[in-house]
Amino acid sequence: MYSSKFNLIVNYKIKPFKKSILVDSDKSMSIRSFLIGAISQNISSVKNVLESEDVFSCINCLRKLGVKIKKTNSKEYLIYGKGLGSLYAKKNSELNFGNSGTLARLLLGILSTTPDIEVRVRGDKSLNKRNMRKLIELMSEFGATFLPKKKYYFPLKIISTQMPIGINYRAGVSAQLKSAVIFAGLNSFGNTEIVEEFKSRDHTENMLSKNNHLIRIKNKKKKFINIFGKKYINPINFSIPGDPSSAAFFTALTLLNKNSLLKIKKVGLNKTRTGFYEILKNHGAKIKFKNCVKKNNELRGDIIIQSSKMRSINASRKYYVNSTDEYPILFVIAALTKGISVFKGIADLANKESNRIKEMQKIIKQIGIKSVSKNNELKIYGKDILEIKEKKIIVPSLGDHRICMSSFILAILIGAKIKIQNFETVYTSSPSFLKIMRTLGVKFEVQK
Image (cartoon, rainbow, N blue to C red; front, side, top):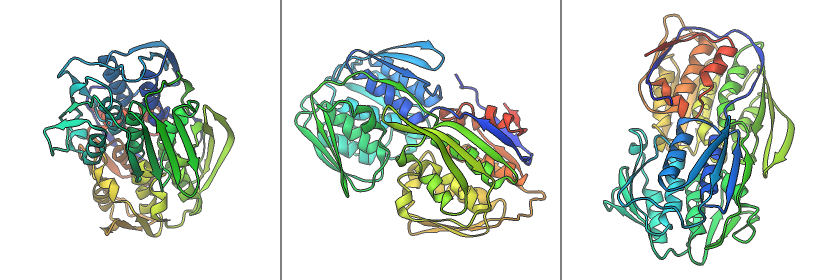
């Protein structure tokens, strides 16, 4: 749908605005809805689906695995569930995950314990560079085989196990790995137990929570998730809220643009996704959550943002789990806020679509902002007043949507000229990004 490549050129400083917007639907929940619907009994219904490249990759993979998916209306889909262990593909056929690390890890979790799966898997140029060692080692514990052995990058071949056995897993900061283990455990014999010390995104658990016969969760000092394998999954009827990660870019823009006010409506406000907003509120940001309601076990509401005089940011490791995707735009806020900002416990950012620490350092250096990265920590020496005359920013083709959007925000806040190569990668998560920018008055040039 968005296959044509293009560069984006901006030479415009944004003016004050007072607006109300809707952002794109949540990508994490959209992908999980299709995956859970595919292995459920009967027909699942999902509304307000994010129609982005990553979600289309998910739909295409499931169709290759024999799942009937029907679009019934704008952003509304029916998923004809095949039940646990019933996905099937011709031997040595290929599944392409595109740019989506979420899809890769979660679908491989399902396939690892689905009988008679022997397929080749790959991603795009960016995803093929991402290390999958942790995922491969976890799925190997269930009994799956990946070939060639000791290769941890796509393309690979997966051969599922015929006799999957539940495992015990002590979860780290990755919600994707945790979800992969949950999915693999659903079709394994016995119990799979997950102990989570740092509470990461819990959309998978929330979507499965009405299935008390197969999942039980205890929240104490640590979170315990027990999966009872070889049960059935009830179909889902779900409406996807707006993506808080997509909303983060417009939040940053409003905070740092004088005399501006923004209302972002119907955004997902799950506590495992709002670390970005907590960090900012702790450092002077005027942000409020209004009209909050809980639907399908997920909190959602409106975000009200006002221009704010920010203080330099000190983000400890505990914030990383619940704000992982927002760190590139946090780095932009830090660069344009006077003082030294410190971000700790961020080493995992090196294994995203790009090395987000190094690439954002290169970008802010182009506008004269110093930064130092060492020992799992980044320091940014921010300035609230910049000499922008003749400043030019070049963002190379990285295949990283968050870097592209963060760079765009940086440029229009200071009025620097910027060229962002292969900006179409933004459509993997936020196909409405440029359309919304136009409603805020931003001018830009598309170069094909």
